[in-house]
Image 1: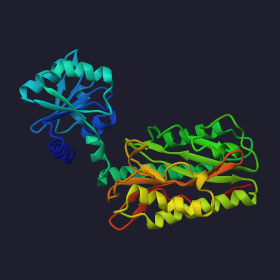
Image 2: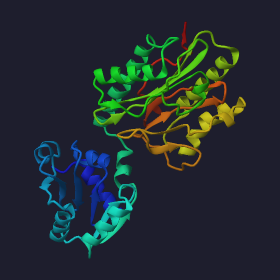
Image 3: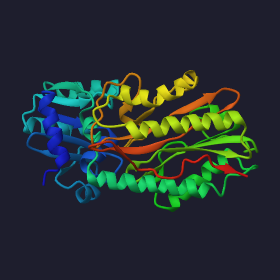
Image 4: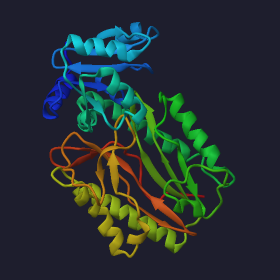
Length: 357
């Protein structure tokens, strides 16, 4: 049975005027086929859908890649692909320009001649932008695990613990509870380091008086979650409380008004305008959010440069922040699904200003 994803890919192939497409990216291969092995190539024509792999994975591929013809490729994979192209009489073959390095391109171009080798951009990624019900179910599970991890960490965060130990504890908790791994290198940034938007965990020791930013996610069932919470260890001063309240206001304002039909630029402005109004616009240097799915950063973006129109079925993050060098910073992030009338949160843990004594 041909999957909906393959059908949609074939429609996209017509738009790009190619008779077939060669998919070499690992994530895109898994998205189309369900195959979780580490070696394989997907060739889709208007009539056939092939998954080529080596002898290690043929049995696994047959079990996972329903609707695909499994082909054990020759020692030189381009030999097998060329045979299939000839059998299917393919004259224009699309390839993923963002996933093929130049050296591979040269090899493919020579090997597949006289078939024209045509670069296409975002062919599969465009399909991945819209999540179906099964994907959303998995993403909700990944988000729930992130929420549970944050709650767990509230009993771990205290003076004397290092950022690195906290990151390790989060990783262990997520893996023990079903995650394949974390979605990305866990960010734990405390004290003045919380002014680093991507302050990956260090050996710094948590101290009383520190803002502590936790930015992490669970990779579960092939899909990512991505959440940020900032907590206070000890008694906050007036400025720490101020910037927390501003970021929270910006985040809640964005969640309230984020809806389909907006461009990424308009969505970004929802948070940016709030922070700018309070005089901290220069301290909010990154985008308000990004797409989320099988990769932690994918389309669409909620950014100053994005004209992409948000549509139901897209999943994005909403993550405004304020970062003051030499002082500290705050970021608050949730994952949300774009719905017909607005959005719905996937991550649901508390965003109250948590103070840990």
